[in-house]
Every structure is written in structure tokens, then in C-alpha cells.
Amino acid sequence: QVPLVESGGGSVQVGGSLRLSCSAPGGLFNGNCLGWFRQVPGKEREGVAAIYSGGGAKYYSDSVKGRFTISIDNAEKTVYLQMNNLNPSDTAMYYCAADTRPVSCEYQGGWRTGMTSWGTGTLVTISS
Image 1 (spheres, helix red, strand yellow):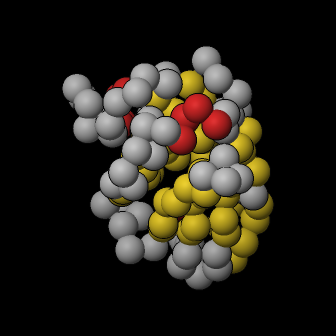
Image 2 (tube, helix red, strand yellow):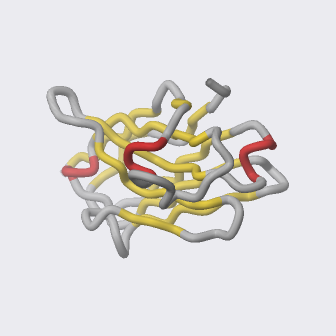
């Protein structure tokens, strides 16, 4: 387990934007899979997006493709999730996650099942 600290959550109206940030240890930016997940009470956690810090390959769930963008800033040791055109179905607790093994996001079962460390979450609420 490594420390992952999310920030940037909040409440916005439909159609608005938010940018989530995740501060992570520098060692995760040399070839690890980093990602964002979300969960609504009573539902399973959903993988939202992932990025491989070794080459930049990005992965998105169908529900956010075209609206959300994941990126990393190696200098700031931060993973970002830019969320645009938000709608009420995006309301959830958002978690930053990392696979601490030096593997790609496609390793074994893939990024949705391979994360080994988790942040404590930041709440995103979309109001109509």
C-alpha cells in the first residue's frame, strides 16, 4: 500500500466540469498503471479510466469516453482526471488507484482488477 491522496471533488451542475487530482509517490511514474474508479452506495466499484506511466497508454470506460481525460504530470507526481459535460449519473465517490507492480495496464486481468493501492476518495456530486 502506498499513499494516494485525492482532491478536487465537489458539487457542480449538469454540463459542468471538474478536475480531480491524485498525489502519488514518485516511484509510480516510471512504469506503473494508475487509474480512477468510482462507486455509488449499493453498487459495485466501476473503473473509470487508467493510464500507463511507462508509455502513456490510456483506457476509459464506455460511460465516460469522450468526456473524461486522464493524464499524468511527472514533475508534480500527480494523476489528473478532467471531467467534462458531467451528468447526474457521474455522481459518486471517486478513488485514485495504483498498481504498485511495474506492469502495464493490460497485465493479466487488466487495470480494472489489478490495482493494489487505493486512496480514500473524493466526492463528486452533479445536480440538475
